[in-house]
Image (cartoon, rainbow, N blue to C red; front, side, top):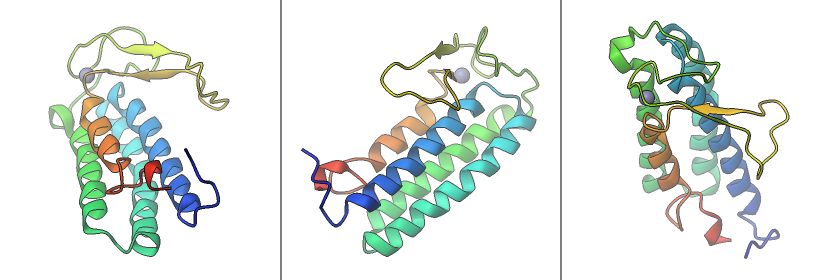
Length: 150
Ligand SMILES: [Zn+2]
């Protein structure tokens, strides 16, 4: 159960917000052309820096967490550079197949979490493995920004 009065709570939630931002941008990257990926990639820099900052100031600059943030950052670089940055097809409308791996694109409106600014989730379920794994690791149990610590 979450203890909202735990001193680490606000920092864990701050980290969760940044990770959610990264997830939303990364999802967009999976269906975008390379030139659009460049632009989106820039938007992940501030949240990555913020995660580093939260770790530094509130998690004793944990080496494990730092390593996992670095892994996440690296996965975003990989996502940006897929096909050597020569993806011309753009499927941001969520129709059809992934412009990189040709997997059918996922497009749905999440019921569990209203997102007024961005009501459709659109992403390639195959390419998203690149960053969902590092994100999962980062939100784990005692060695990341996990909520089980509070
Ligand atoms: Zn794909």
